[in-house]
Amino acid sequence: MTGGELVVQRHVQKADLAEEAFTNPPYGSPWQQWGSIVAYLLVAFGVWGTIMFSLMQRSAQKELVRRSKAKSDHADERVALAREIAAKSQASAAESKKRAQELALKVARRRLADRTRISGAASV
Image 1 (cartoon, rainbow, N blue to C red):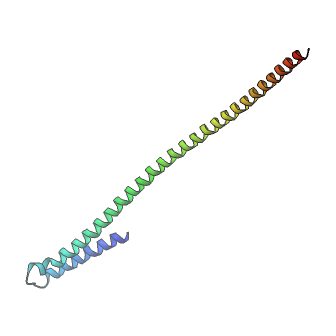
Image 2 (cartoon, helix red, strand yellow):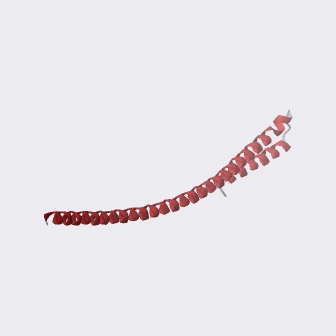
């Protein structure tokens, strides 16, 4: 038994004892006769309600944790995909830069060849 169940059980037992006390001695007013029984039962219902609300809160908390973990996992997948795309883009950019340097080198060689051809023709 949990602590809450023991508390509820104790208060119900006290209500039973109060009921026994009710049957033995005579009391003056109905509140004197039923007051302690009603009080014990109200406390027992209050404890029971607290336990029920804590169980509902625990269930809701578990659901929130599950949902946030699912969202976190989805976000992790998206981050991994974004990193993969970024790596491919960087590789493509590096390849483009290398290709641009090769083309610039070819253009520079062609210009040098044109200049030497022009200067060679001018010296003839």
